[in-house]
Amino acid sequence: MKKLILFAILGLAMSSRAMVEETEAASAGVCLWENNPTGIQQYYCAGDVCPGDILYFRAAQRQPIQYAWSVGMGASIIGSSTTREIAVQSPSVGGFTITLNTGTTTYFTLAQYSCY
Image (cartoon, rainbow, N blue to C red; front, side):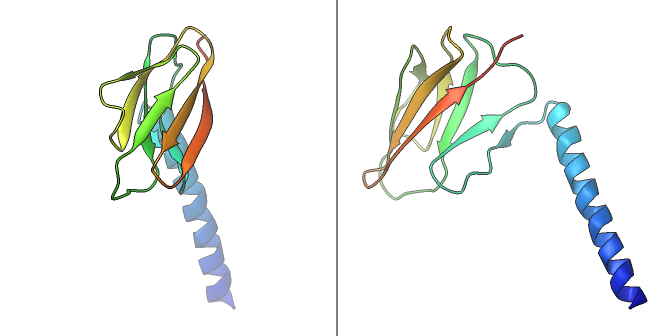
């Protein structure tokens, strides 16, 4: 019973430590892909995103087919729109639409950001 309690306490401590490390990494400027198993993932970095900044997106799953990306509301794709990962220049408004067509499925999301 004592071992079970000890392992439970160690598990909670390790879980809390992992969350703290993840938060510290994000606040230190480390960028991480959004944890979204399907659809569109955004590459998040600590700090503000302002008009004209470049944001990165990718298809959550690799497909053996070609990707077709499109953006709206004043955003523009930098480079190719047919690869798994794309770069998008943010517009002057606080968000834009982004669509991914994989040939079999279409994903749609609103990318929002703030600049202070």
